[in-house]
Image (cartoon, rainbow, N blue to C red; front, side, top):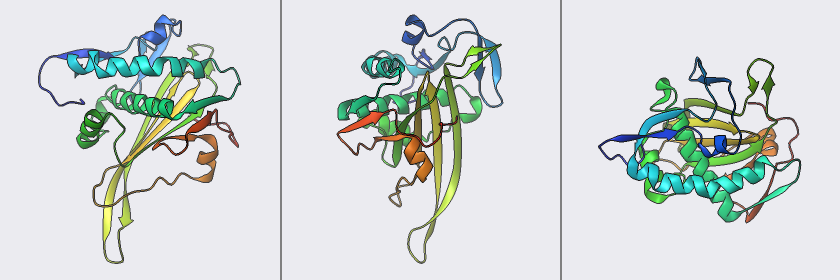
Length: 234
């Protein structure tokens, strides 16, 4: 999925098993795909056979370990403002991109959601691809009387925009947008698939108030959660 190597594939958790070990688990219903397939299982037990052992036990494992204390700190903020320094912003952005790609493989209709060139670039540079933006926000954990707390969710959208490169040239630019919620933390991963024109992130005013940019890094320190004008909807 990332390195392109041929050979035996290993199981990768959609969301890290360390979450279950921290107590974010319990019996319940898990919904996979669109339209959703409902399974009786904990939210952090789902695994996919999609990556090689070298990736799974190497850089992917290290990335989970690097992101784990940062994510747990946000989970347990309890209303406090949390500073996220530049190194932490990069780690969270890398984790969000990796997790967004893995989540896409939960739905067989979305296996080509992330273009191969972006997955290879991520693997080779150890950073989210060019023409990609990652933002972070917050929302409360929704709860259902039958299903219990909804601890994690994933949503994917894609499309094609026509961009005017100059007065005579228009280019069709495919794009994708992935939203991930893990406990109370929300990540939005957006990408444009083109080498012909440099795209710019253009979030609307409301979205800017509800999220902070993680990638590309813009400030040495950002504060989470953002000051939102309205609750972030998923």
